[in-house]
Image (cartoon, rainbow, N blue to C red; front, side, top):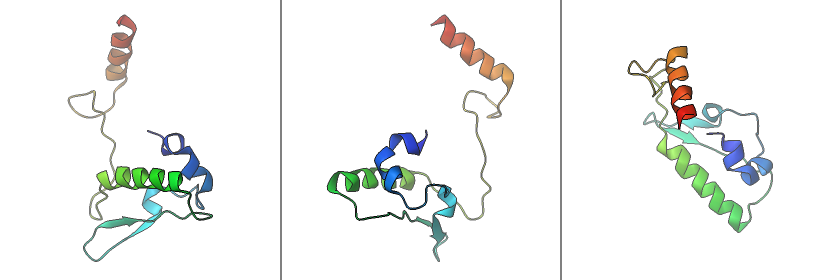
Length: 96
């Protein structure tokens, strides 16, 4: 999911468009990630609603200070990406 596309209005008024999610916050004393979004101006009501949706979406994902980021390919039993597994998905979709 591209957050820029899903939250286009907040992205437009965000003060730090190039910041990655992990760069936009701090770790607290409980080793919990506290994200922070900077805005170029005060938000209108509809933008506050989108901000709440975005924060809720980010809260569903939890960063861990002692864990490395990894990619998981859900279409494979091993969770590793292979061309073969991608080919199988494309083949299935083409068949309908």
